[in-house]
Image (cartoon, rainbow, N blue to C red):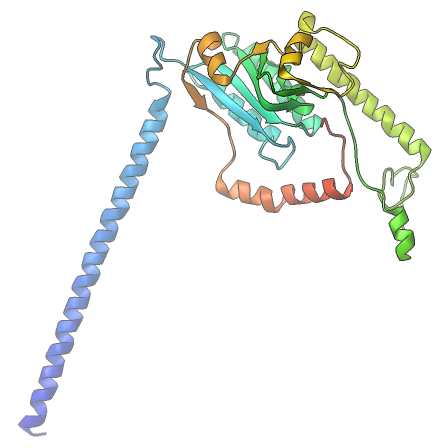
Length: 319
């Protein structure tokens, strides 16, 4: 190969070498900046964590440096819901265990839901009150505190509402749909096999029998009696029993105070400032991590909602 052919090849090699060198240098710079930003993000998150941990120790404007813990109950009460017993109880336990907590507020905006879930929370509030005798518990209703939500509230030391809050609905229901007429029109035959003559009780695709209604009314009556007993135990002499008090009716917050279903008018801020004596509110509401919330949405929550809509396997509701 002559010299004229060697020069271009040498020039190309030099160019490739320069490009490769520049590329490696760029990669090193990008790697260094990547490490820098990762460290910066880590430091930022660490600072947030430190500030969050120290938050309960910050001065609230009082010499004690205490705060009022808030646990929110929002929406339908039931397993797989935001207002599940597991979530509410986790928040309550964290609130009571915090050394800076001077009082606890259960802030409620819920129409009710599962009597079992509401009962779990009621029992846990009573247990925590016995364990932490120096920490008062207040229920504060915002828009709605009805049925199962009120079942929870009566476990608190006192209940505060807004004058326009909807309070009460002390009753139990079980609901669903009947599709027998529609099935006949469509020419669809229902085939149901059971072991146990009452296993198909309240099946939405079978005719409603009188004995089924009587039996279910008896069960609902038992649950209603349990609800009434909890209200009487929680409210004591403050309760003014009148016709319709336990009939499932709703009252305004103002009327609820007159009936002894609530102790007074006031917001969370009012209760923290005037009753607890620790104006600073700290939210202890537990909602689970992102993975848990997605699993609940796609799993138990979806199946529970479908069952509720169709009336299939639906249980009683304090709602």
